[in-house]
Image (cartoon, rainbow, N blue to C red; front, side, top):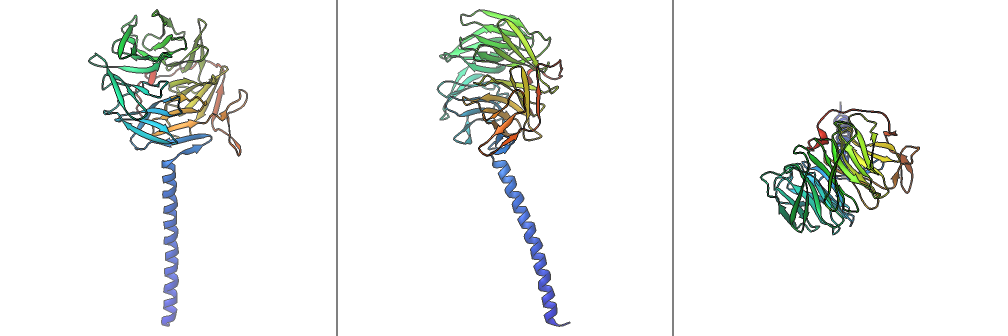
Length: 379
């Protein structure tokens, strides 16, 4: 065989091997680019837009919308608090690690207030990152949810002193509950300044009037595990019943309850939108839900491992949620549901159906086992 033939065959083999290697390299680059795009976000699916945390170890927990459009969120086991503004996530250092940071609200000036259990304090952080802390005079601090009243006072549930406590101008005022085992958890304040709270251990709602009168109301479903709470513009009180898998409502002296279709959904946080929709998270089911006109609609989040915990609705009716697996998510206000058809998301180009939508009216009874109130945002 001539040298020319051998050289030609060798060159052909080399070209074939080079083609294979180039194809492999191209595939690797495509996969790497896809992974980078997926992690760096924002990531959208069926109307949802999700932003990954700046650190892979960050666990976003509860979320609150500010008047200026910023969205604040706490981060479990982190020495920072998060804020989303100008289209990106930022981490603002707070000095020490969070443990169960489930109390968060934003005041009229855009300052975020949060519970600081390890520091035994209620703290405030400015949009620029300046922190002011107000120390509690207790050896331990078992703090739950937090809310801001129309007059600017800060209210929070304090399990260590069995009270609903007010902070105003640096002064704490405690309102003790009738039972030392009441287990105060959720807190909300209506437009008239009336404070509402859930008492997990005794299955009650507490009502503290603006003039200081305290009343405790029994929730109809026994051992329902009342958790987070919110008040709508009409003054109706909405709250989660974690163990009963229901949404409760109290208005005009009467209770009503709405069963969530997915059994054992793990109801965690609740928020009322400006348009009157009541939104909530389902930690165990990987969904967020909406209650409107007596009908519950559930929406599965884009990822199979989703663990939504906190939820808030901004002034434009965009729904924000904190996912314990490391995401801050948003469902745009343009994604609306009519009462008689599945939820649809309308964009400038098309309209697509949000997948895995479940709807129900008041429905029947459903039970769920597990810890009341899902206090710990563990994954």
